[in-house]
Length: 354
Image (tube, rainbow, N blue to C red; front, side, top):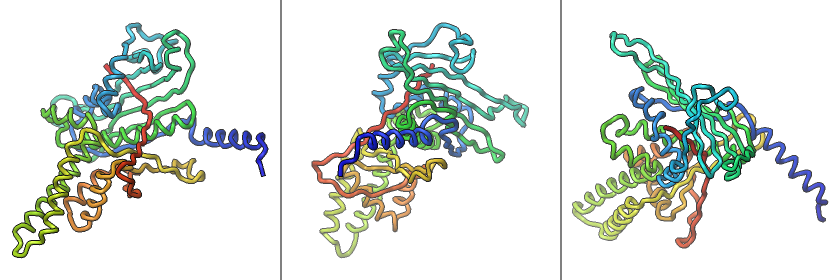
Protein backbone atom coordinates (compact mmCIF):
# COMPACT_ATOMS: atom_id res chain seq x y z
CA UNK A 1 0.00 0.00 0.00
CA UNK A 2 1.40 3.39 -1.01
CA UNK A 3 1.86 5.87 1.84
CA UNK A 4 0.20 9.22 1.12
CA UNK A 5 2.68 11.96 0.30
CA UNK A 6 1.41 14.29 3.08
CA UNK A 7 2.29 11.58 5.63
CA UNK A 8 5.77 11.15 4.15
CA UNK A 9 6.42 14.88 4.21
CA UNK A 10 5.04 15.12 7.71
CA UNK A 11 7.34 12.32 8.87
CA UNK A 12 10.37 13.99 7.29
CA UNK A 13 9.48 17.32 8.89
CA UNK A 14 8.91 15.73 12.29
CA UNK A 15 12.15 13.72 12.13
CA UNK A 16 14.17 16.76 11.09
CA UNK A 17 12.56 18.86 13.83
CA UNK A 18 13.40 16.16 16.39
CA UNK A 19 17.04 15.94 15.25
CA UNK A 20 17.40 19.72 15.20
CA UNK A 21 16.01 19.94 18.73
CA UNK A 22 18.52 17.46 20.17
CA UNK A 23 21.50 17.88 17.83
CA UNK A 24 21.13 21.36 16.36
CA UNK A 25 21.73 24.77 17.91
CA UNK A 26 22.95 24.47 21.49
CA UNK A 27 25.25 25.83 24.18
CA UNK A 28 28.06 23.74 25.72
CA UNK A 29 27.77 21.24 22.88
CA UNK A 30 31.27 19.76 23.11
CA UNK A 31 33.62 18.99 26.00
CA UNK A 32 36.88 17.08 25.81
CA UNK A 33 40.13 17.11 27.78
CA UNK A 34 43.38 15.28 28.44
CA UNK A 35 46.19 15.42 31.01
CA UNK A 36 49.80 16.27 30.24
CA UNK A 37 53.00 16.99 32.14
CA UNK A 38 54.52 19.15 29.41
CA UNK A 39 55.63 22.76 29.93
CA UNK A 40 52.80 25.31 30.19
CA UNK A 41 54.59 27.91 28.05
CA UNK A 42 55.10 25.37 25.26
CA UNK A 43 51.42 24.44 25.31
CA UNK A 44 50.42 28.11 25.26
CA UNK A 45 52.71 28.75 22.30
CA UNK A 46 51.24 25.76 20.44
CA UNK A 47 47.63 26.94 20.84
CA UNK A 48 48.49 30.49 19.76
CA UNK A 49 50.55 29.65 16.69
CA UNK A 50 49.89 28.03 13.31
CA UNK A 51 50.74 24.64 14.78
CA UNK A 52 47.17 24.17 15.99
CA UNK A 53 45.87 25.13 12.55
CA UNK A 54 47.99 22.47 10.89
CA UNK A 55 46.38 19.81 13.04
CA UNK A 56 42.90 21.24 12.42
CA UNK A 57 43.52 21.18 8.66
CA UNK A 58 44.59 17.48 8.89
CA UNK A 59 46.53 17.61 5.60
CA UNK A 60 49.24 20.15 4.68
CA UNK A 61 47.64 21.03 1.33
CA UNK A 62 44.36 21.89 3.08
CA UNK A 63 46.24 24.14 5.51
CA UNK A 64 47.93 25.90 2.59
CA UNK A 65 44.64 26.33 0.71
CA UNK A 66 42.98 28.04 3.67
CA UNK A 67 45.95 30.18 4.74
CA UNK A 68 46.36 31.48 1.20
CA UNK A 69 42.86 32.96 1.45
CA UNK A 70 43.23 34.57 4.88
CA UNK A 71 42.94 38.35 4.97
CA UNK A 72 43.58 40.13 8.32
CA UNK A 73 41.12 42.89 9.20
CA UNK A 74 43.07 46.14 9.58
CA UNK A 75 40.07 48.03 10.95
CA UNK A 76 39.68 48.23 14.71
CA UNK A 77 36.69 46.37 16.10
CA UNK A 78 33.68 48.41 17.19
CA UNK A 79 30.69 47.45 19.30
CA UNK A 80 28.78 46.82 16.06
CA UNK A 81 31.45 44.74 14.29
CA UNK A 82 33.13 42.81 17.15
CA UNK A 83 32.36 39.09 17.25
CA UNK A 84 33.84 38.58 20.75
CA UNK A 85 35.05 41.91 22.16
CA UNK A 86 36.82 45.11 21.17
CA UNK A 87 40.30 43.65 21.73
CA UNK A 88 39.83 40.67 19.39
CA UNK A 89 41.93 39.73 16.36
CA UNK A 90 39.71 39.42 13.28
CA UNK A 91 40.20 37.66 9.92
CA UNK A 92 38.23 36.89 6.78
CA UNK A 93 38.79 33.80 4.66
CA UNK A 94 38.00 34.83 1.09
CA UNK A 95 35.90 32.71 -1.27
CA UNK A 96 34.73 30.30 1.46
CA UNK A 97 32.63 32.85 3.39
CA UNK A 98 34.31 32.35 6.75
CA UNK A 99 34.77 35.08 9.33
CA UNK A 100 36.96 34.43 12.38
CA UNK A 101 37.76 36.33 15.58
CA UNK A 102 39.81 35.21 18.56
CA UNK A 103 41.27 36.51 21.80
CA UNK A 104 43.99 35.15 24.09
CA UNK A 105 43.47 35.09 27.87
CA UNK A 106 46.36 34.09 30.16
CA UNK A 107 46.67 33.93 33.94
CA UNK A 108 50.05 34.03 35.68
CA UNK A 109 50.98 33.68 39.34
CA UNK A 110 54.22 34.51 41.19
CA UNK A 111 56.59 31.54 41.28
CA UNK A 112 57.34 29.89 44.62
CA UNK A 113 61.09 30.53 44.25
CA UNK A 114 60.71 34.25 43.54
CA UNK A 115 61.59 33.92 39.86
CA UNK A 116 59.56 34.84 36.80
CA UNK A 117 55.76 34.50 37.07
CA UNK A 118 54.41 31.07 36.14
CA UNK A 119 51.65 30.57 33.56
CA UNK A 120 48.77 28.77 35.32
CA UNK A 121 45.95 28.92 32.79
CA UNK A 122 45.35 29.81 29.17
CA UNK A 123 42.32 30.30 26.90
CA UNK A 124 42.10 30.79 23.16
CA UNK A 125 38.55 32.08 22.78
CA UNK A 126 37.47 31.85 19.15
CA UNK A 127 34.36 32.40 17.08
CA UNK A 128 33.74 31.14 13.54
CA UNK A 129 30.90 32.44 11.39
CA UNK A 130 30.23 30.78 8.05
CA UNK A 131 28.34 32.74 5.42
CA UNK A 132 27.25 31.56 1.98
CA UNK A 133 30.51 31.28 -0.04
CA UNK A 134 31.25 33.91 -2.70
CA UNK A 135 28.11 35.90 -1.84
CA UNK A 136 29.81 37.21 1.31
CA UNK A 137 32.70 38.54 -0.81
CA UNK A 138 30.10 40.52 -2.78
CA UNK A 139 28.60 41.99 0.38
CA UNK A 140 25.61 39.61 0.60
CA UNK A 141 25.62 37.82 3.96
CA UNK A 142 23.50 34.67 4.29
CA UNK A 143 24.28 32.91 7.58
CA UNK A 144 24.94 29.17 7.38
CA UNK A 145 26.22 28.45 10.91
CA UNK A 146 27.95 30.13 13.84
CA UNK A 147 30.13 28.49 16.49
CA UNK A 148 32.28 29.63 19.43
CA UNK A 149 35.10 27.60 20.99
CA UNK A 150 37.51 27.71 23.90
CA UNK A 151 40.85 25.92 23.58
CA UNK A 152 42.71 26.15 26.85
CA UNK A 153 44.37 24.57 29.85
CA UNK A 154 44.52 24.85 33.62
CA UNK A 155 47.19 23.75 36.10
CA UNK A 156 45.99 21.12 38.56
CA UNK A 157 46.92 20.84 42.25
CA UNK A 158 49.42 18.05 41.53
CA UNK A 159 51.28 20.22 39.01
CA UNK A 160 49.96 18.42 35.95
CA UNK A 161 48.07 20.32 33.25
CA UNK A 162 44.55 19.64 32.03
CA UNK A 163 44.09 20.71 28.40
CA UNK A 164 40.49 21.15 27.27
CA UNK A 165 38.51 21.88 24.11
CA UNK A 166 35.08 23.34 24.83
CA UNK A 167 32.35 24.00 22.30
CA UNK A 168 30.76 27.05 23.89
CA UNK A 169 27.88 27.56 21.45
CA UNK A 170 26.64 26.38 18.07
CA UNK A 171 23.92 27.83 15.87
CA UNK A 172 23.06 26.02 12.66
CA UNK A 173 21.64 22.81 11.16
CA UNK A 174 22.12 19.52 13.01
CA UNK A 175 24.06 17.70 10.22
CA UNK A 176 26.72 20.41 10.35
CA UNK A 177 26.97 20.13 14.12
CA UNK A 178 27.58 16.38 13.82
CA UNK A 179 30.37 17.00 11.31
CA UNK A 180 31.89 19.68 13.54
CA UNK A 181 31.80 17.41 16.60
CA UNK A 182 33.36 14.53 14.68
CA UNK A 183 36.14 16.74 13.39
CA UNK A 184 36.78 18.20 16.84
CA UNK A 185 37.04 14.67 18.28
CA UNK A 186 39.87 14.14 15.82
CA UNK A 187 41.47 17.52 16.72
CA UNK A 188 41.39 16.64 20.44
CA UNK A 189 42.91 13.21 19.78
CA UNK A 190 45.60 14.66 17.52
CA UNK A 191 46.51 17.45 19.96
CA UNK A 192 46.79 14.96 22.82
CA UNK A 193 49.11 12.70 20.84
CA UNK A 194 51.22 15.58 19.57
CA UNK A 195 51.57 17.39 22.92
CA UNK A 196 52.34 14.17 24.80
CA UNK A 197 54.78 13.07 22.09
CA UNK A 198 58.54 13.01 22.60
CA UNK A 199 59.25 15.87 20.17
CA UNK A 200 56.90 18.44 21.74
CA UNK A 201 58.65 21.23 23.61
CA UNK A 202 62.09 20.26 22.26
CA UNK A 203 64.35 21.80 19.60
CA UNK A 204 63.60 18.96 17.17
CA UNK A 205 61.54 21.13 14.79
CA UNK A 206 61.73 18.63 11.91
CA UNK A 207 60.07 15.88 13.97
CA UNK A 208 57.42 18.29 15.21
CA UNK A 209 56.53 19.41 11.69
CA UNK A 210 56.44 15.81 10.47
CA UNK A 211 54.03 14.84 13.22
CA UNK A 212 51.76 17.87 12.78
CA UNK A 213 51.64 17.29 9.02
CA UNK A 214 49.49 14.21 9.52
CA UNK A 215 48.85 12.81 12.99
CA UNK A 216 46.90 9.69 11.86
CA UNK A 217 49.65 8.73 9.39
CA UNK A 218 52.34 9.30 12.02
CA UNK A 219 50.56 7.14 14.61
CA UNK A 220 49.92 4.36 12.09
CA UNK A 221 53.59 4.41 11.05
CA UNK A 222 54.64 4.15 14.69
CA UNK A 223 52.44 1.10 15.16
CA UNK A 224 53.62 -0.53 11.93
CA UNK A 225 57.24 0.04 12.94
CA UNK A 226 56.58 -1.65 16.29
CA UNK A 227 54.89 -4.62 14.61
CA UNK A 228 57.77 -4.94 12.12
CA UNK A 229 60.38 -4.76 14.89
CA UNK A 230 58.66 -7.51 16.87
CA UNK A 231 58.36 -9.71 13.76
CA UNK A 232 62.07 -9.17 13.03
CA UNK A 233 62.88 -10.36 16.55
CA UNK A 234 60.67 -13.40 16.03
CA UNK A 235 62.32 -14.10 12.67
CA UNK A 236 65.78 -13.93 14.26
CA UNK A 237 64.69 -16.44 16.88
CA UNK A 238 63.40 -18.81 14.21
CA UNK A 239 66.58 -18.42 12.14
CA UNK A 240 68.70 -19.39 15.18
CA UNK A 241 66.51 -22.33 16.16
CA UNK A 242 68.11 -25.82 15.97
CA UNK A 243 65.29 -27.00 13.71
CA UNK A 244 64.13 -24.28 11.37
CA UNK A 245 60.57 -24.02 10.11
CA UNK A 246 61.21 -22.83 6.56
CA UNK A 247 57.54 -22.03 5.84
CA UNK A 248 57.23 -19.92 9.00
CA UNK A 249 60.48 -18.12 8.15
CA UNK A 250 59.25 -17.35 4.63
CA UNK A 251 55.93 -16.07 6.01
CA UNK A 252 57.70 -13.75 8.47
CA UNK A 253 60.01 -12.43 5.76
CA UNK A 254 57.02 -11.67 3.52
CA UNK A 255 55.20 -9.95 6.39
CA UNK A 256 58.24 -7.80 7.17
CA UNK A 257 58.60 -6.69 3.55
CA UNK A 258 54.89 -5.82 3.41
CA UNK A 259 55.16 -3.79 6.64
CA UNK A 260 58.13 -1.86 5.23
CA UNK A 261 56.06 -0.89 2.19
CA UNK A 262 53.12 0.17 4.36
CA UNK A 263 55.42 2.32 6.53
CA UNK A 264 56.63 4.13 3.43
CA UNK A 265 53.15 5.28 2.40
CA UNK A 266 52.46 9.00 2.54
CA UNK A 267 48.68 8.82 3.02
CA UNK A 268 46.75 7.49 6.04
CA UNK A 269 44.28 4.67 5.65
CA UNK A 270 42.13 5.35 8.68
CA UNK A 271 39.13 7.56 9.39
CA UNK A 272 37.14 8.53 12.46
CA UNK A 273 33.46 7.74 12.09
CA UNK A 274 30.58 8.64 14.39
CA UNK A 275 28.70 5.69 15.85
CA UNK A 276 25.08 6.67 16.31
CA UNK A 277 23.28 5.81 19.51
CA UNK A 278 19.53 5.26 20.01
CA UNK A 279 17.43 8.45 20.16
CA UNK A 280 17.02 8.09 23.90
CA UNK A 281 20.70 8.91 24.32
CA UNK A 282 20.66 12.17 22.40
CA UNK A 283 19.92 14.32 25.41
CA UNK A 284 22.89 12.88 27.30
CA UNK A 285 25.33 13.06 24.43
CA UNK A 286 25.09 9.33 23.71
CA UNK A 287 27.69 8.93 20.97
CA UNK A 288 31.03 7.30 20.32
CA UNK A 289 33.59 7.50 17.57
CA UNK A 290 35.16 4.46 15.94
CA UNK A 291 38.23 4.04 13.80
CA UNK A 292 37.61 2.59 10.35
CA UNK A 293 40.46 1.20 8.24
CA UNK A 294 39.78 1.64 4.54
CA UNK A 295 42.84 -0.18 3.16
CA UNK A 296 42.90 -3.98 2.93
CA UNK A 297 46.64 -4.35 3.63
CA UNK A 298 46.54 -1.96 6.61
CA UNK A 299 43.48 -3.76 7.93
CA UNK A 300 45.26 -7.13 7.73
CA UNK A 301 48.31 -5.70 9.51
CA UNK A 302 46.19 -4.21 12.32
CA UNK A 303 44.10 -7.36 12.62
CA UNK A 304 47.33 -9.36 12.91
CA UNK A 305 48.55 -6.87 15.52
CA UNK A 306 45.34 -7.33 17.45
CA UNK A 307 46.05 -11.06 17.62
CA UNK A 308 49.75 -10.57 18.45
CA UNK A 309 48.84 -8.11 21.19
CA UNK A 310 47.46 -10.97 23.29
CA UNK A 311 51.00 -12.23 23.92
CA UNK A 312 53.23 -9.29 23.01
CA UNK A 313 53.43 -6.34 25.39
CA UNK A 314 55.12 -4.00 22.89
CA UNK A 315 52.46 -4.51 20.21
CA UNK A 316 49.70 -4.33 22.80
CA UNK A 317 51.02 -1.00 24.15
CA UNK A 318 51.36 0.47 20.63
CA UNK A 319 47.85 -0.63 19.68
CA UNK A 320 46.38 0.80 22.87
CA UNK A 321 48.19 4.10 22.31
CA UNK A 322 46.68 4.35 18.82
CA UNK A 323 43.16 4.07 20.20
CA UNK A 324 43.62 5.68 23.63
CA UNK A 325 41.28 8.62 23.04
CA UNK A 326 38.05 8.40 25.04
CA UNK A 327 35.17 7.20 22.86
CA UNK A 328 37.51 5.81 20.16
CA UNK A 329 37.18 2.07 19.84
CA UNK A 330 38.66 -0.62 17.60
CA UNK A 331 36.11 -2.30 15.40
CA UNK A 332 37.19 -4.93 12.89
CA UNK A 333 35.30 -4.79 9.58
CA UNK A 334 34.65 -7.44 6.97
CA UNK A 335 37.50 -7.84 4.52
CA UNK A 336 36.96 -6.08 1.22
CA UNK A 337 38.16 -7.33 -2.16
CA UNK A 338 41.56 -5.90 -3.09
CA UNK A 339 40.04 -3.91 -5.94
CA UNK A 340 37.36 -2.45 -3.71
CA UNK A 341 37.84 0.82 -1.86
CA UNK A 342 35.81 2.52 0.80
CA UNK A 343 36.46 6.08 1.85
CA UNK A 344 34.80 8.29 4.39
CA UNK A 345 35.38 12.04 4.18
CA UNK A 346 34.33 14.65 6.67
CA UNK A 347 33.97 18.39 6.21
CA UNK A 348 36.03 20.22 8.77
CA UNK A 349 35.73 23.61 10.31
CA UNK A 350 38.83 25.67 9.60
CA UNK A 351 40.23 28.52 11.66
CA UNK A 352 42.88 31.20 11.15
CA UNK A 353 45.47 32.85 13.31
CA UNK A 354 48.29 35.37 13.17
